[in-house]
Image (cartoon, rainbow over all chains, first blue to last red):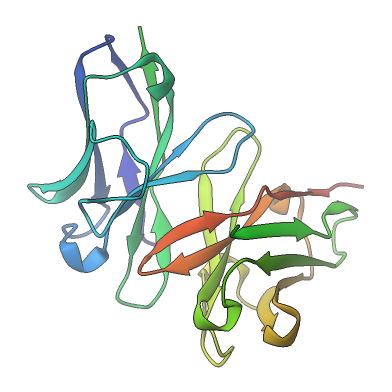
Length: 110
Length: 117
């Protein structure tokens, strides 16, 4: 069973920078996993932020960026704002044709 | 406007069955893979299954194989999730999503399934 691990939580100051990561229980994340990132606030459906590792979805501010850092996918928020306080999930495509969501990271802005 | 609207959730006893539906509008439904994702109370997202635009290919997570079946009716612009042998741990909000270029780019508002005696 593949597990995709994210940091449980992060705290960032307004205007600060935070990098969330997304790793595989076995192996490295690569662009072939087509990492995507989603933002979710309570009782809302997820919102797509990043796809294909580093492409922003329409309407997503450029303070959100995606990358591969070492053996993990990463989402960086540069210049965090209060309304960035949310849960963030990564999604990886596996060679079997299935997908796996990460465990999620709760970001607090204070 | 591109829209997905789920329905069919509710309260069901353990061992029971339920069929969820997702009505799509605002795009050419048959051109896209579609997926089901769930979120258990207070927990994270779990990808469940995806189905090709013509319905001829599906993929599922191992934990629901043999119990859940994804299907679609392109004439009705609708996606379905047939769930059987339901367990308490299947209690969740179920979302349908458009699976487009290895991302879920459109999401429904979700429908709640509660499995309890």
